[in-house]
Image (cartoon, rainbow, N blue to C red; front, side, top):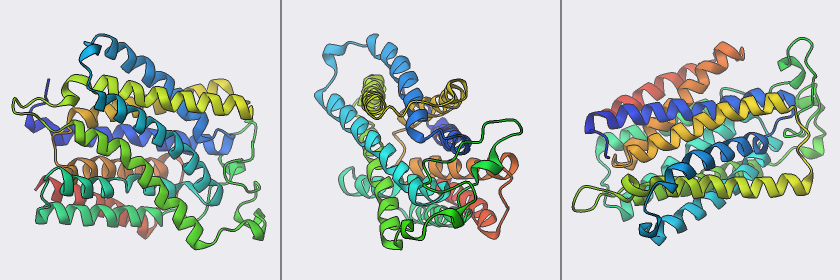
Length: 326
C-alpha cells in the first residue's frame, strides 16, 4: 500500500539514518580486523530471511521477469561493491569511501531525468549541488585511517587492520611503494557509486506508478530485495569459504553484523516505500542524512576532530535537505 504523500520525505530521511548504521559498523570493525565482507554476510543473511518470508506470501507466479532480472543484477553489483570498498580501504581511510558511496544518487538522478521523465527543477538542482558539496566536504573530514591500536579498548585484542594494508603505527608505517597514485585512488572511489547506483536505479524503475497509481514496488519489492540480499550472501559465503577468511571474533562480528543488517533492511524498505519521490529528492535526502548521522556519531563516539570540513558537512547537508523539500 503506497505511503501518504506527507510521509515520503520523512521516511526518506529515516532511511538515511538507518543506512548510517552500516558505515558505523564498518568503522567499529576496522580496528578489530573485521572487514566489510564479514559484516555484509550478516546483512545478507538477515535480509534474505526477512524478505524471503515476505516474498513467500506473495503470488510468485505473477512476479514480472523484470523484478527477477533487476534483483539478481542489483545483488551481483552489490557483491562487487563490497570488493571495491575493500580495495578503497586498502588504499586509504574509510571517510572518502563512505562519501563516495553516497554519490550514487548522481547517476541515479541522471538516469531518472533522461529515462523516467523526472524533470530537473531549479530547487532540485540546487539541492543536488548542495548534496555534492556536502559529500566533498565530508571526504576531507578524515585525513588518515584510524590506528587499530588506538581504537581498541583496554584489555581487548589489538588486531592489525588487514583492510588498510598498513602497520599499527599509522600511515608512516606503510611502505612507500604501496602508496597509490592519486589517479588510481580516485578511479577506485569512482567505481563505488558506479556499482552502488544499480540497486537505486532498479528501485526507481520499479517505483513508477501505473495508471491506477500502483507500482511494481508496491506489490513485489519483497521479491526484489530477497534476490538482492540472497545473491550478495551467496557470493560472499563462497568467497570466504574459498579464501578461508572467516577467523574473526564471532560475537563481536555478529553484533556489528546485526546492527548493520537492521540499518540495511530498514533503509532499503524505506527507499522502496517512498520510491514515488523524484530521484533528485529521494536519494539526496537519504544520502545526506546518512552523512550527517555518521559525522555526528564519529565525533561523539569515536572522538574524531570537529574540523572546518566537519562543520561544512553539517551545514551543506542541512541546506541540501531544506532545498529538496522546497
